[in-house]
Image 1: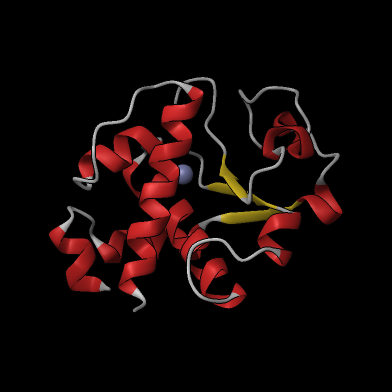
Image 2: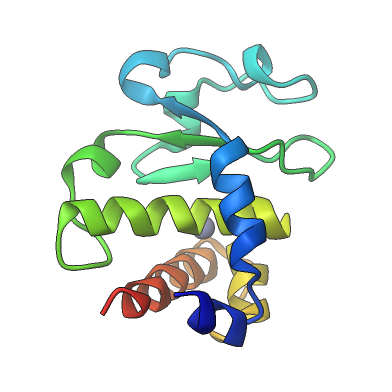
Length: 142
Ligand SMILES: [Zn+2]
């Protein structure tokens, strides 16, 4: 994966460092926590609301900074997404979120930086960018 990611502008060591320093929350146990309970300058939405129907989300504060906090939930634990099996899907999700924190960048900016395409900053564009990132990461596991 190291060469693949380096070829796409990603420093795997920076990503790995973020993955190990990140704080992870699960909506199974912490879904009623509010963002502001975790990080100053965050909103008052609960983690469950912030995650919605997504597998995982990286929190971004009111200043656009990435405080290295990842929220995971039902889909992360139970649904295969990118990759052939649940464990691989979970790994891809964690690397995906660590990339957000390593680059301090959202899905459209990460996808662009990785050369995966330029996606519009619309809900559909963000979703498509997110899928492209995880699909690329899945190719790293083949
Ligand atoms: Zn993403």
